[in-house]
Length: 146
Image (cartoon, rainbow, N blue to C red; front, side):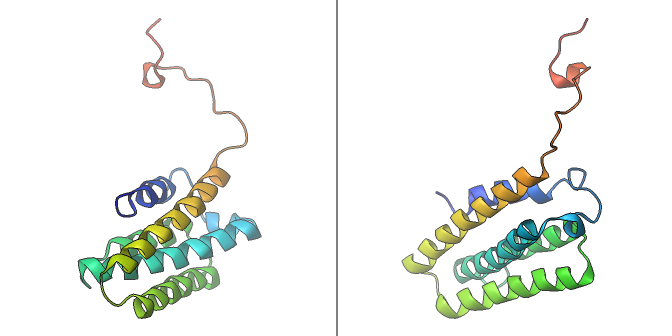
């Protein structure tokens, strides 16, 4: 597995399109989903610290994903603060444990990626509509012209 590529893809699917998430979605989430968001924020913080160990302190890849996550969630102020705190806690935890880039930090980065993948996958599944989408009616959906 190269870097946390799959986590990035899954997280990208989760946060790239605010059209998929209703406005103020963070406030509408069930308690277990809110906990997954907190766990994901922690994992993003871990990933940020581990990536910076190898790429340098100027690398903001995972921090920018966290910012995007908070933008899309549009959570109430208290929950937004909780997510940011979890990110910072994850970052501090891994920064102190893996201050330099080595095999151990790379393995930890892969483990964080796997954890993040699972969390992002579960969150994206909870965002899927419960009813089937409307029937396609255009060529944009792959139908031939009539």
